Length: 256
Ligand code: IPE
Ligand code: IPE
Ligand code: MG
Image (cartoon, rainbow, N blue to C red):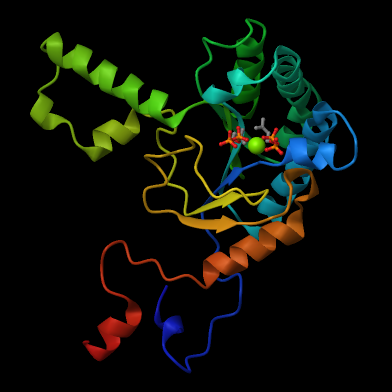
């Protein structure tokens, strides 16, 4: 992102700096339902429809990676029937949407702790990933039973075991080696993290990967999110100046 913060400099047309990787904390389903006197499950069900719209819009807008937070490691704290409903929605999403995603050249990945899920879900996830593995369009990463701290601890444990077994020199551990062992593996870090529903926190979502992400918080409740809202977030991103610890474009230009 170059001179566009200079006073008087023309901004490039919005949408020019499309983030390669957008990550979304899809929040507000419960409040959406409560506002309508509906059960929370109805909010989650409508949330899946918002996800469909958002995937389509991300493809149209030229986003390469889309990561969505669907179920956190901490969401087990919810009532059993709500947890069960969220598990069923993942099953339904894979059963109903896999063919369509595949037809749209979407590569599906699911990140999170699979071992902790009902036993019928892991094979569905494998099916979704295997079916779409060779696709070259959008990569859709669904964070399901995902917790960022748990992810980091798992990597630390694996590296420690290798070091203790004498197969790894601790001095060889660097950021690249660590990142390659996270569930996100080869994915680029998210350029933009969006959270809906007005909450402004990470809630254990991608803490390592979002170290230098831009954030957009919107009051829109997730079931109301759509392509227009995504475009607005991308436009806000395009106006940001990312510095990565360096100096801004203005300082570079004026030497001050
Ligand atoms: C997000 O909506 C979906 C999940 C966390 C699974 P919420 O269910 O958190 O909705 P609110 O925050 O209660 O409105
Ligand atoms: C984060 O939302 C998890 C997902 C969106 C899946 P929560 O609604 O669970 O987060 P908190 O509890 O408000 O931080
Ligand atoms: Mg919430």
